[in-house]
Image (cartoon, rainbow, N blue to C red; front, side, top):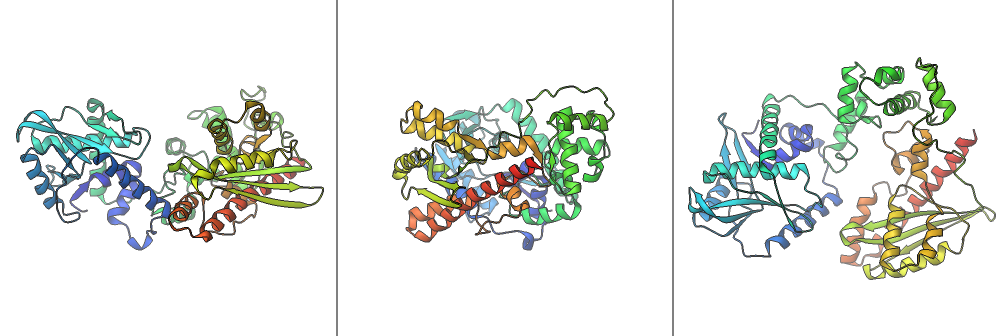
Length: 500
């Protein structure tokens, strides 16, 4: 093991123990190039930090890149001189076992008091692009606080986070110092043992990781339970405690067995998900009265109890003469919905027409919003299908921003039908996640540009604004149309499945 543990590595360990291990011991050839969206996030993060630092004068120590010892010496000199604000300094301390701990707080701010330097000491500030003070940010601040205490021989009285809204957020050190110390002990132990942590695919955390493809391939070869929708890290440990280590074992277990560690609803969903995956087929969800009754009888419960949650109506998915399929492309950092894509399907004429309402500049958002309203009201009786919640929430934002009368919006919103929610309420499928791409690809649909996704489109739009290269807009337009057509494909399959 390397004898240096940085704040970056500790943060990686908090997010994923395996990733931290691979950063030290992994084969670099198994690591992918960082995605464009990840690079954009890094650039945006650096720009945000610089904007905060520029608010007041500061000094930055000069040292060779990642030469921690030189960085520490340069930082020490600035602290000894009583520099008011030190940016991107290096703090360094050694453990009793000889490990070197390193952190680089975004800002050290001088305060009156006593320390090894004289009548002053420093408090750390961590600057992040996030909106919320996440636990990992607080742990990072606590780590910097402890190293700073070692360096200046006195504990800082505070530690701060500055996030996207730029209001300082105080870190409760009484809570987060002990939590950080426990995390640090676990991290050092894991890395010293050199035992590769188990693969676990997390749908929220793994997407941007450069080790994802390598880890996913291992998980696929092992048929790992983390690939089963509904299996969280905590539930995974609960399943292992019951001796359930395979999809097939879960598919054949009794729900009452799982109820010792899971709620009845989650246990039922998990068994059914395992059955769909093991049998590679779609299954009507147990929320249906007759199906739920079958589940209870099969699992030894003769007495039927009505479900506590509303029973979805599989007849609530209309088939109309004209149907609209809607998808948005957005640039979150600009709070901009720059492409409102609408696919108009007219069954009586057997035509499908795609309308890409595109704001080539951010100032054109109002114009495409008006064009969208005009288009959808050409078909006042047509249901509007979309996938997941974003589209409806975005329309509410646009309506408020551009003062659209409620008399126009309320009947419009009542026409929206969330195909994702319809799937989640009514059918279980043998997929790794219920994203549009996973669902549509299981049905045989494919996007024309295989390497493009929503995050990539964010980058492409930013590049368009910088370069004026119209081919970038064409890629985005094509991707948005394919999203609309994938939603149409999925809706058609659902309607056919319900009729079977």
